[in-house]
Image (cartoon, rainbow, N blue to C red; front, side, top):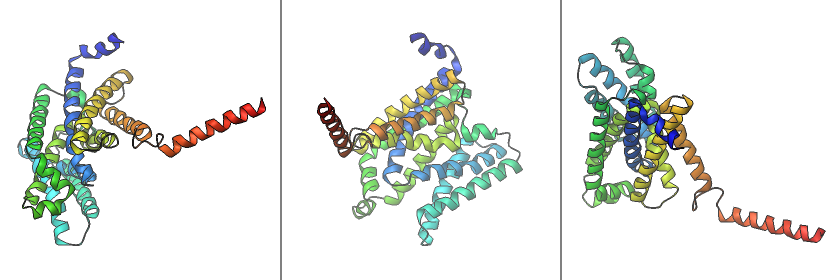
Length: 296
């Protein structure tokens, strides 16, 4: 067992994959918790696709890819807000339009500017190709975002649960919204190496949703989600090492399996632990016993 655990650690690329996987696993559920509570989980997916045009333009003009991706992601988030503020269109429709527009624009730019991107690794991640500079960048983003969330926790908590009340109390709700979008975009950029644009939403919501079914308070959900995210990433990397399956999708599948287990067996919210179901099982057991005695 110990050898089974140690063998992958002999390879540098696995150590790098584990390091970035754990960082992403901790960061994504913390940010994802806010999106889930605000019923904006799909926004993560929309922003993930919105970074594509920026990546393409940055690569073509020689600007840092991160600046291009960040500007494009924020532009997408602001575009959604603008559509909603100028019309009676609801959030889901505005997100669907922005998602498809930016994704199509990104793919068009990738093809016309002839960028040398590997589209597969961009969409699904390539955690095994992680370099020390990738780890350092993800570590810096993780530390920065966790520090910002720690400092503004009370304001974000009030804004998340009651934005009208927060506005009435004089909190800068528009600045908090843009700040949350900036944090979400940075988280997506930090996670792209590990799980890619398409799968990043799974890391944003998967471990956080599992935590949501196990605890009640937001700060508990963020902390438990971070622990579950780190565990899921580690198991996913080991699973992909021993089965030779792609790493990004493996991490996501482990995360989804954990969610299904929690959905079935959570002590307070589980489908199979509901009091009425347990009572039915007990009644069935007692009736079987009575039948058994009767036949004797």
